[in-house]
Image (cartoon, rainbow, N blue to C red; front, side, top):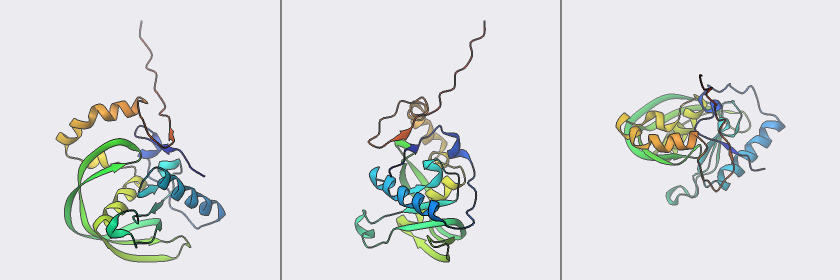
Length: 188
């Protein structure tokens, strides 16, 4: 089932997600829906908060990128970054911030402890786009968006676009949750 994606101004994207204690049929269904929703939106990663679930779960599939075509899709539960090495800048985008891109500096290599789709404990070292995508999605689990990591001067350049998304002026080819517009009372 394709799920709508929560966008920039939604409160759930700013909350720290809760750890999972295990995997049941509901989580398995959510994982399948997350993969379907991510692929429908032409994404390479999706975190549970982006589809309205404040839990520490994310999915990745980089196989649409040439050099990662043999990389298997990943289900990552309760991730914890143990160590990082090196840094590099790269342009990022996000399904929750449609139409906006910006440069973000992140570690080049990470060692990650996490649980897989069977809730088996794993530890692995990841580099390149895989390390970047994992960090981007883990940020979602911590209530951080890639635009929060941009240099202030670069963020100023996209501020109008962010305000437009927050006001509901967004055009996507995938379903999104309409932002909750706050009505400010007028004083007499």
